[in-house]
Image (cartoon, rainbow, N blue to C red; front, side, top):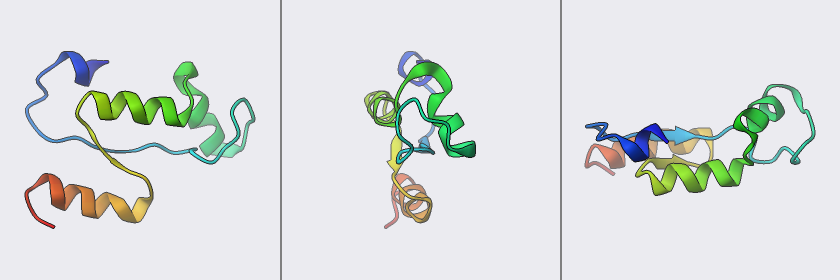
Length: 73
């Protein structure tokens, strides 16, 4: 919500943990993180994208998204 309502002034790259954790099931840290805010990982991804964030779907994708946000890769 903050990103959608604010001119943050710089690119945001996000990685949503717990994408593969079943909804409503606790699976350690990933399952806990996916339950925060009551949204599924896919719903969080959609909201972040709608707010203009770049989404990395896997940890190795974070570097590529950061480089792309800086005008590289």
